[in-house]
Each structure stands twice: as C-alpha cells, then as structure tokens.
Length: 392
Ligand SMILES: [Zn+2]
Picture 1 (cartoon, rainbow, N blue to C red):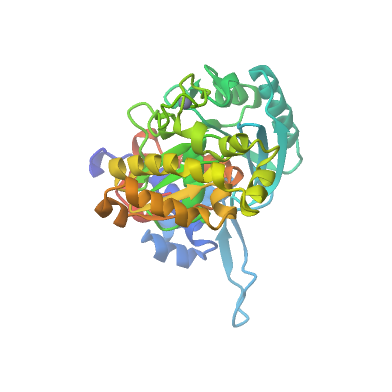
Picture 2 (cartoon, rainbow, N blue to C red):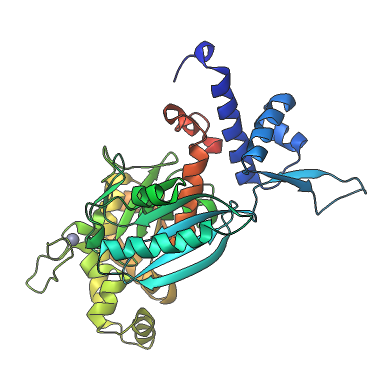
C-alpha cells in the first residue's frame, strides 16, 4: 500500500465511496448524519462520496418511511428497483438465470436443463441477459457467472469441470461481457456460496469458517480472516476429488478417477446410488426407513470432513446438503462417525452446522461483491484486511 503522503486525492475519494457503500450495504438505510458517525468520515467528505454514489446509481436518498416526531428525515439506501444485477449459475442437471436489485434481494429465477454444448449455454444466457438489459428505466450494473470446477481467476477461464465439461477451457463471463457491454465476472460456485452464507446465511458475522457444498458435486472453501483461501492460482479447495473409496465397486468420477469423495457423498450421487428418479424421491425413501445405502456412505463423508478439519482448523464448518437438511437423523449419525475419523481436540474445536446455501443468492452476492470492490483500484481491493469490520 502506498504511503499516506503519496495517495492521490482521487484515490482517497474512491476509498471513501467504497467505505460509504460497504457501510450502507451492511447497516441498511442511514441518514447522512448516521453515516458520518458510522464511518468516522467527516460530514463534508462523506457527502462528496454520497453524491458520487447517487450519481452512479449505487444509492438512493428518500424520505424515511419511519418518520418520528413529525420531522422528515432522509435516508440513504441501496436501490431495490430501477437498478439490477444478473446471475448465471452453471450447474448439473439444471442451470439458473437470476435477477436481483442492488440490495441483493432476488426478483426472479429461471431454470433450464444444462445444454450439451458451450455454444448453446452461451446463447441461452446471452438471449436472456439481452432481454433484461433492454428493460426501460432499469440500469443493469453487472452480471456474475458462478460455476463449479477448476477456475483460473487470472484468466477468468474454466480449466476442468468434472460435472460440467462443456465449460472446460471457456471464459463465459468474458464472452458475455464482450457481447453485453456490462461488467461480467466469473466466480467459483463455492466462493459465491460462501459470500451468500456470510451475507445472509449461517455464517453472518464470522471471519473464519469453512463451507462444504454437497449438492451436485462436493465443493469446499475455507474462509480465513474474511478471505476464501484460493491457493496461488485459485484452484484450492477441490476436496471433492480426493479418493476415499479404492474398492472395486468405486464409481467412475467425472474427473476420470474412481472413488472420489463426490461420487460417494454428494446429494446427486446418493440419489444415483439409491436408484431414485429425483432427490425428492430419494429423501422421502430415506425418511421412510430405506437408510442402508446412505448410511453406508456416511463414513466417506466423515473422512472428507476430517481432512478439512485437520488441514484448516476451522472454528465453524457449514454443510450444504438437502439430504442433511431434510433427514434429521443424518447429522447425529455423521457426528458419531466424525468422532472416529477426527482427532478429538480438532473436532472439539469445530462446530458443525447446516448451511443455508442457495446458489441463486450466491451468484448475486458474487456480482455485488465484485462491483463494490471494483470501486477500488486493484491494489487496494484487499483494504478490508486493514479494516475487518468492512470485510464482505
Ligand atoms: Zn473426481
């Protein structure tokens, strides 16, 4: 970070805009006086940042609905109408197209069967986004693509997605940005889920936690001091492809290996193992007493979770799985298995709870986070490390 004396006045202005926006995103509507107090920025300086954010459509200022003592007070808030962000969730067996206001509240969600070619996927997403961009009196601030697999963040490119191979080698966000002319960003679905979990889910107020998504494949991320640990190139966290079953019956994984954690314990793989036509059917059958197949796979999940706990020592681990959410007997059974597979002090140090994961909320949290941080020059986008209270 440059020394204080060398910071350009324009740069300070950008930092103040970021601080003001982040504070209102976190605290909700504030008057200008409340904002100056909350940010410790002098009123004239905060006012300058507010004007810039109002001009760019990031804030609205309007009469407070909750006026007390008959004195009107104007509040600044993030707009829920007249402005939007878009999200594309690439997944199996369905993808999602999501819209939301800048406040992150979802407006609508469309699902479609994952196409068999990248060109078809891009065409569907592009046609949908163009329709939304053409809406009168609504400004589209940006779009996020969330997807699983290995993603090179420096190139915004999917490298290898064992569950959605059509994205391998492609740059969906850059391709959409070139066609649409609005900022588009690619984010790993587990990072988008961790943002949503922190913003409105089980991890609110937590700077250190781990998240394991067990829905389609197995995604994992450890958030350390407010930042997901991504490895040097963004490829860290692929716990789903550690081998947990080396037996002859181990199923072939989309990565080419056999017996990967995700072929044994994801919701989709448990459904497949039960021969159920849908996840709803599989869960209903489990709750009706057909527990043998799922219970036989619990030890693999315990092995995977033990690896995560031993490597990262997270104080909290959140599990995102409809099986775990809708089958009350499963989490206690998993805890018993974890007691066998994990060193006791490490397990005692980690609370394991269910996530409230939602990939639609995740992709929207991803674009709002990206656009908010884009207010800052790249070199300062980790400023919140200096000010943890303003971390995402
Ligand atoms: Zn694999």
